[in-house]
Length: 201
Image (cartoon, rainbow, N blue to C red; front, side, top):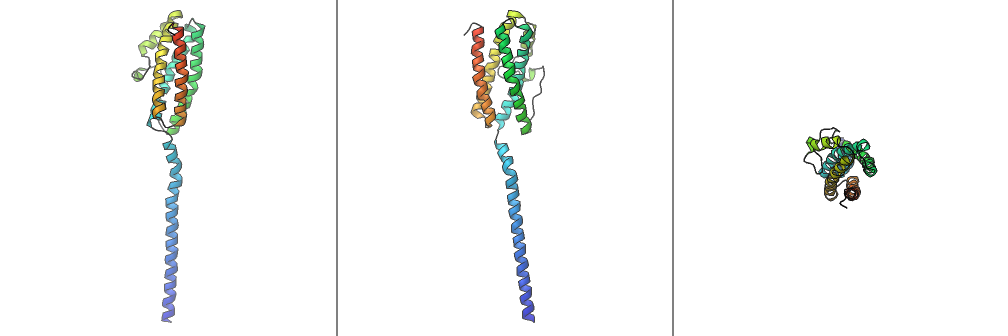
């Protein structure tokens, strides 16, 4: 009886131990597998962009916003139909880009620059006009406006091309580097067009 009882206890203990080990193993697999499954998309999302991509979007949004502000002035201040047409094209191209970059920043959980009339906080950014420059442009009319607008927008575009060039070489987020490439192409073409209108081309 003693031997039979001992054997039964040993069998029961062995079975219990096996179940415990299986259960632990299952938990380990679940524990190890779940974060991997959960963190893989998070890592992919985080790895899809870098600090340069964030910097590009946060810098280019206010840069574009100022270009739109300048372009909108042309409608009732410019005397040249060519300047008015150029300003309309700039507005048509850059407004959707602002919306796109805003979407990126929101998806990344980053701060989105707010639209505003005060550009003093971006004075050090390449190609940005000062508040004094913007005030002078708003006061100009006719041919004087045309010359001032074109001169300022050439400088503004050159700054955007510089910023986009940095994004192309250092950014990781494919849609951002593609936009940067498009900005370089389009704005370099517009710089040539504006210089020609200024008699420099």
